[in-house]
Length: 223
Image (cartoon, rainbow, N blue to C red; front, top):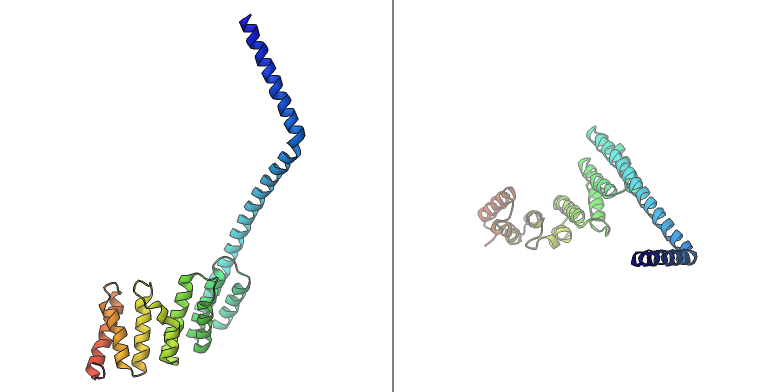
């Protein structure tokens, strides 16, 4: 009898669960289906976006390599046109990389004012990675050593001279050379001395700084 009772209760419980499931499905079935559909559509859209992004990035990469090939073949104008197109409709990091490369090509072909303008624009581009912005400012600063004033160089690179900055010593060197060119030996000595005192300075940069310090000392124009 006890066994029959157990079977009876199990059957009743199963019926109750079945009734509850049917009730829930009648009441919430459309909502459940809608949620399931959204999950499927969302997953498909995400996978589609991933494929689109990867495909377009691959295309941009191929175009970027082709532009670099044009530059290496001494076709700067064609390379600049190709890079400008990538800046307009490229994907991923390629637009800003194309912009940077365009500045280098401009400098190599002797268009220093154009290159400085390009690097300055990248340095002010808020959506560009910080490392790229700083590198662009440094490139502009170095070009301005020969073509601009100390103040113009400082406007580009002085913010990067603080201890711990990745490009600090390159920025200090640019400022030291700009001051030396302007005939301000005490200021030049200050920047080169900062490099010489920095144990983290790359050896080649530190060696150049020491050479400049020796030249300044020999000139007798700085205490």
